[in-house]
Amino acid sequence: MKNTIGSSVSITVFGESHGKAVGAVLDGLCPGIPVDGERIANALVRRRPSEAGESARRESDKFEIISGVFNGCTTGSPLCTVIPNEDVQSEAYERGLCRPSHADLAAYVKYHGFEDYRGGGHFSGRVTAPIVAAGEICAAALEMLGIRLATHISALGDVTDTPFAGHAADIVALRKAAFPTLSESAAEKMRAVIASARDRGDSIGGITETAVAGLPAGVGEPLFDSVEGVLSHALFAIGGIKGVEFGGGFDACRHPGSEYNDALRYENGSVVTKTNNDGGINGGISNGMPIIFRCAVKPTPSIAIEQETVDIISKENTAAAIKGRHDAAIIRRICPVIDAVTAIVLCDLLAQRYGTDVFTKGIG
Image (cartoon, rainbow, N blue to C red; front, side):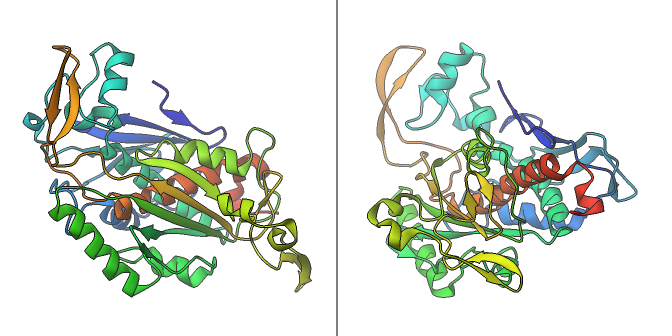
């Protein structure tokens, strides 16, 4: 299994949903980056289920950093974070019963039945907890360079939120919000949509939108390590994400170039664009405008409604109503995971561009 991503700054993820623990090794960060345990804990709170219609699994996420940090700062050696699994109920999962739209069938075929199927095993959203912990360290490193990022729920059902303008104030507010929307009215309407899906025993997906403000122009390694390419590669590792678009995305095909193109001008001695339809990226390289991208998040596949499926052990057709503790919508909880993955990727790209000491010595 390939569980590592990154060139200069990399992350390796390990563990299973119902195993002893989940964890991540963050490697390549320079020494001297402050590591704030309270900040990491707050990020994990944002990822944990807390809203109506979310999983009843309650993990304390009492993380432990077992290497790579000394006297409150990174040492430059691999930074390993471990988070114990404490609230597991493995009896709800049956070997051989392939849950529709889960990885059960594909994992059984690839790993010949030796995979840990309990709670989705290594394919579970549980493994995103250490990614969030590692990503928060990277987000703090980015902020030392004046780079901030955040994700909100752009659309859920027929409810839409205010689009991102990339303002730093919106980013700061979102990273503290219990429900990540820019509009309070949108949050309440989305909560109602999730509750409705839960009451039907069903689930619902949606669209997230992420903004990165303060990233300097010139970051990215074309052709195959473009900003879009590396981000998409990492984002698609998050379970449930089925699409990624940057800037105008697919909507760009509906407009002529005269409407879509981002006009250029000087402002306070710097080149800026009048619009940001390219999402802050040209030629795979950051252009200094906010990076804007959206992710399509599919409905949670675990639902209480009976569905057709197969038993891969007995080789019989059967039906299943999924048991266990599941979310009617994962989209609120996926926002801090997207933030974390984005922060890790940007740290890697910045280290490639400016050297690994960039986070303590600055961009010079």
